[in-house]
Amino acid sequence: MDLSTILRPAAVKIVANVSSKKRLFQDLGDLVAGCYGLDPTEAFTALQQRESLGPTGVGHGVALPHARLAGLDHVVGAFMRIEKPLDFDAVDRQPVDLIFALFAPDGSGVDHLKALALVSRTMRDGDICAKLRANEEPDTLYTILTEAKATRAA
Image (cartoon, rainbow, N blue to C red; front, side):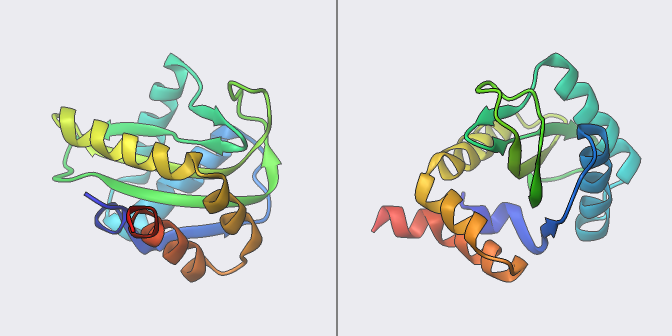
């Protein structure tokens, strides 16, 4: 599994400002609706429900919201970079500007965990995060994300 199997180029977006975590989840729901045909309300609700179990802000300006949805046949993702960082109740109490959301089928135990581990490893890489913050084009961000594993493996 690599990020190119989870993430489509159209699911990468730069957003100037998001007023709240709720608004971010609505935007992510709209993004995955357009890219993968998911129901935006179901995606939003699933993210909200998962977040109520505990914040998905993992530190260093990164959040990894994730949820399970009925009707999916494989794990899909969406990436957003927010120009004005958002308070996300992250473990290090730092605001978040890099968000990689994952949506997995209802019954996908191992695939969901593998995808979450892959995204987590990628987003823990300080060089990758610096490149994501330094570039302004969604296509470039997609390339940085999807080529990250190949570069580290070499």
